[in-house]
Image 1 (cartoon, helix red, strand yellow):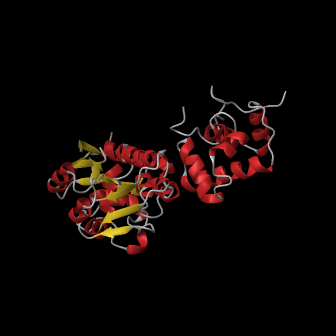
Image 2: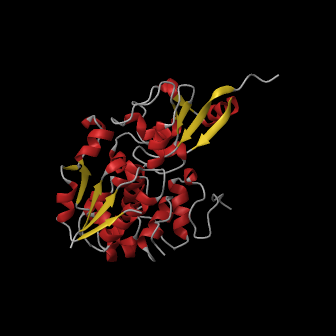
Image 3: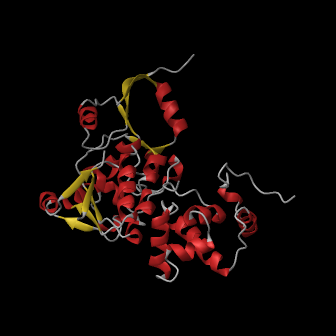
Length: 116
Length: 106
Length: 96
């Protein structure tokens, strides 16, 4: 059974999303399938060219890029939120599946958890 | 005495910038490991991994998984890695590689 | 003698677009006010749904962390020292 972890909060401002990423990695460690869905301001996680050194944090874009290596199946993003916050497709990281309908995606998972 | 840079109570470097291959050899002596090509293959993998993802594999299981993904079953298994890096391989290897402690390793 | 203080309000906003406090803050700006975006609020720089008032500035380190350097002109990016200086110029400050 795949767990869908939903991140609806902007990166860096709080630790909530980072904890959700840790949860995804922990599921992957025990070979429990997991997928991530970014919605609302959470899609800002998916912007390219992040560099968090100046605010004393690790760069989430780089942390997130380890997900496929650990066996995290898919990264989804809400399409309308991407159009709002990342209108230029070139500004988005690679390997994201666009979700036209979040409701439709949520219906496909028996286990959905929200970050925070 | 060799001037080993400061390390924390678990043997991890306080300042990752002080790491050199020579320092790695010194740290490896804690676990009575004499670093071979096989060790270095893993250590350089971990350092590259850190440079790319700004984190060490967070747990031993994910460390093994990442090695398996990169080098195949022959090396990506806990017995092989345990032989090279006794104790908790991820923790021992990160310590020698001059990287932060994996967050979920006890 | 110290220079006269700015008649408007300095709004320091750290909530992401869509957050209720972000919405309240933007709804309460007047022409005399200055808006400073920090932390999550800097996402407004690339938010198609937000029209930022002219003169809005943002903390450069927060812009850079989120990969928004191309979305905010460099002359509108400030550092912490400049933020401190701004706070000295306003008699009234709201931290949202």
